[in-house]
Length: 330
Image (cartoon, rainbow, N blue to C red; front, top):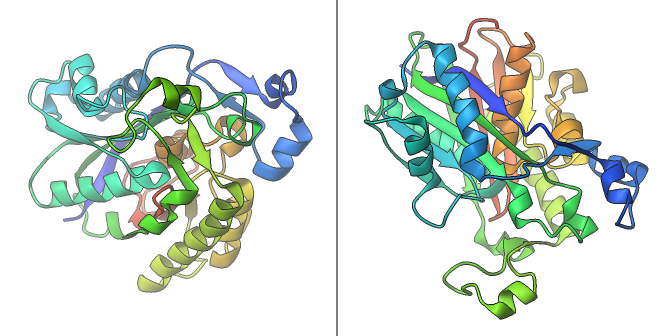
């Protein structure tokens, strides 16, 4: 039997930062931001770490499934903003939730992190390495943003999506296929210069703002448009899916223009595309599970729906997952 998503929830901080917030101190404006990114507002966490975004979503996810925390036997956290270099954020989450009998780890694949982690979780469950796996996609992007750089400050937000991965009781429903790629040559265009073993933290690295995101916007945009569109078409063709077959495209929420290009390549109208970048910005590993949780909660997803998840991120990393939704209507 395939593995499937048996429960899902999300959490975003309560504090909303509209585009007008940046107008006060940066050379930008609401129209400029919306026309180039599709973002109107985003949520910023004023305190805590990535684990504090995950915990409320995890509690809701587990309670919704009607199980106890001790039923969880594995935790995977996809993030590029871990609470600490070590221990892993999965361990921090395990402790905060009071889970006693689980193992787990973090996965770092930037904006493709949730899809890489989902594929890993699926293989663990299908192979018997876990029965009830708590899969978390979350980032506190404000922890690595240069808020004085208009090219990056406006793009990102904080948030978490959490789902439970279990074995499906229907061979036709669940996560059915995946395609994942990396190209390390693209790392030069989107990375964090310091903080790792190559360039440990120092007064110089902090003074030079090397612990913030570095992004060559045009190069990343060009690669993302092609990468997300190509991988989405590839998984459709591999599974003999037409545009009519697909109920939803769930794209990583990086830029509305990238999302539109991907949908166009797939032949999908915008009413078949999950888009919430306007409300949350780019929450990196959180975007796809937040979309899934929000649409399901709003009654827009139904059991049996054919869904394509698609992402592109630093690395370069990119991928697509094909699934058939197995949860009953909200």
